[in-house]
Amino acid sequence: ASTQGKTRQQDIIRAQLELTRLEDKLLILEQQLHSAKNRLAQWLPITMLVKSLDDKFIPPVALTDFNTLEFSQLMQLLMAHPAIVAIEQSVLAKQTQVSLAKQSYNPQIGVNVGYGYRADTRMGQSRADLLSVGVSIDLPLFTDNRQDQHVKSAISITEATKTQKRVALQKLKGMYFKEYSQLSQLQKRNTLYQNILLVQMAEQSQATLNAYTRDDGDFSDVMQARISELNAKIDALNIQVDQHIIIARLNYYMSSLDSQVMGELREEQPDEH
Image (cartoon, rainbow, N blue to C red):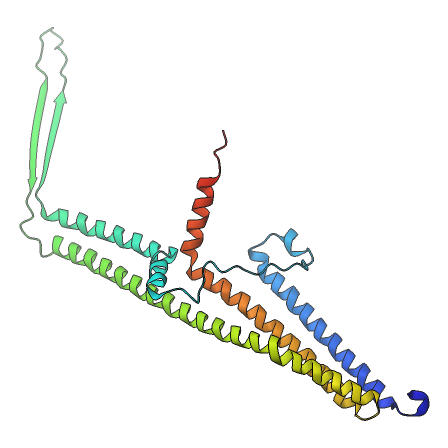
């Protein structure tokens, strides 16, 4: 086509420019990759971070079917979440403190027994040993200034911990529904991209290229169609990445299931002697 004068020099320059822009995008992505690896340095050994990425990506597996999970089942799983269980253990400890504080209302009885051995005198006379017995009784007659305040303080701390548990449970529930809503929308967008949008973008790109090769179209239209198709593929990939991220976050709220699975696996493993 160039021998016939149909291909202009500016088309070649435009193609080179777009290739340079793509190379710049690759450099930016490489920079983001190194930055992500550096953030992982606090969790993973450096020997793992210096390795190249594996081409075989293993997506996270959902611990349960979030679409069929009922509300009652969700609340049971959230109640068994390690964060909630930790607060429950704190509540039990505070209740023990309340019981101990109430014990101060009971009379405190103490018994002291002492025995003293006495050797014989220098003259050889024997001396009787000493035995002492003491009994003490502490009667909490005036409890306003000490026992009452101690018990009230322990009860107040216990109720505050219970409130903390309710707030934590509501927060987990709210965050779960937020993530689940985003996952539902991403699933719809992924279906739209895979079944319709990417197909249409490919058809448009091919149509503009066919028109240009027949000298019936402009090169800028071909480039714009190719770039739009590439951006659509990147958007589709980002949607899938976001789905994997949200599934991993939703698995966090289902961590009690993961604990049960790990416990079952440990029970199934034979004991080594």
